[in-house]
Length: 300
Image (cartoon, rainbow, N blue to C red; front, side, top):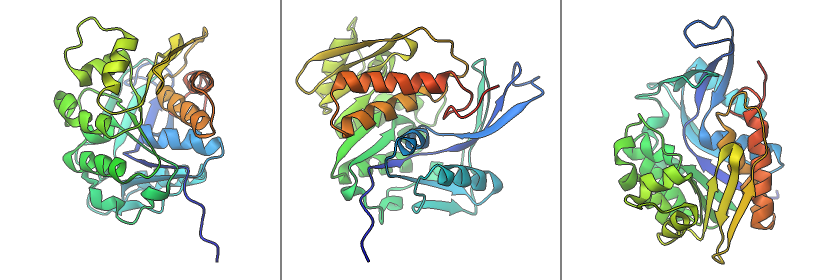
């Protein structure tokens, strides 16, 4: 029997069941959309839709919310072989509206108890690329160690999105918890604010200066998403690239950054140059931002 081909991308992180208010604030909206959201799985969805073979490693509760998440991701063609179902801890929940309000029920979730042991049987070394975000390192000590282990074991491209988020278990220790990921990756995504949060005192340094400081810690390629304003990147050859954004009317920008990551990564994995990768990422990000849901699969 011919063994399966190696995965193009193996990702690690938490995904929650997501309830989105479609008409006004979360407190008063009469209609909602039920979907799912998680930075790494959002990227996997986009990469799978682009034709790549992806695997997502995580934990879900042995509950209805976990069933919904698993069914949705499996339906996108993502391999869930290494997703553990926890009978004691619940799947995380996210409640948000289209005006920016968001509330989480994720403390003590199944994914907050991920450990490096969850990677034991995962063919990490054979994957063309691995992907993890700072959120994983900020939701618990175990997930943070697992994220570092994923990067340490990787035989292919090691990709990190800093994704600094307030209000998580480790948010007040972001520099200490995220630097190990920065030091172990080949490509890092981060806004100027996120780079400053991890690097510490950077004075008045702008995008290119921040990118060079970040590259000094490990990654050869530093990418700065700028939402509707476009994106920029510092290449391994020290060249600085900028891609201008296009006017757009965002409906739901949540998840657009994950789609940007996927578009950029897809182009680079197929040998495309950085300018093409920036354009591809911006295009996918815009597509998600102008539709409802973390993966851009619906409209109000």
